[in-house]
Length: 157
Image 1 (cartoon, rainbow, N blue to C red):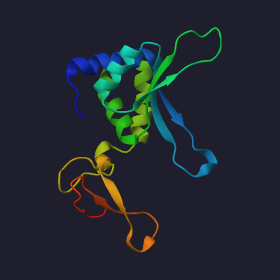
Image 2 (image 1 turned 60 degrees about the vertical axis):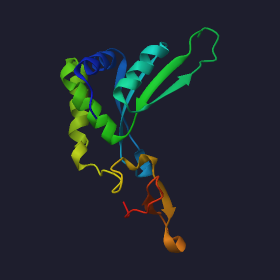
Image 3 (image 1 turned 30 degrees about the vertical axis):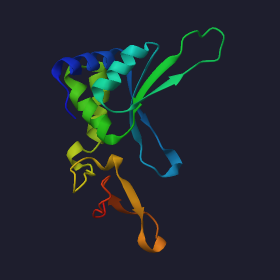
Image 4 (image 1 turned 90 degrees about the horizontal axis):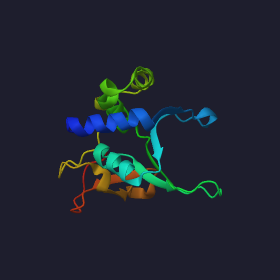
């Protein structure tokens, strides 16, 4: 991911003040622990600007039904290892000591971005996020080959 310095510093400052770095333990399910970056606030324009700058995660609207709660809450979060690693590495120099300590804990436990498997289309060079998968021949478990939006069959990922 690439961010210009001005927007990166703004996003890191907002995350320093409002964000949360947390680890969700999967427990007995056998899954791996998951680092999360989250942030919530009532200012939709600010959270939308942050989301636009970081180019990852999602924003959800939460409305509290209790009578004392008047404003809706907008929550941004990302849970993918690649996004968490990239954002923490980029924000690190701009975070305070307490958040740097937590970020360092996460960065050490996460594999580097380069070691994460990259799913890039061999034909168009774009991420395979927008690509679909063909069913595996013979109906076996798992998905089959990636298909480019131009309907060109690609090698297995």
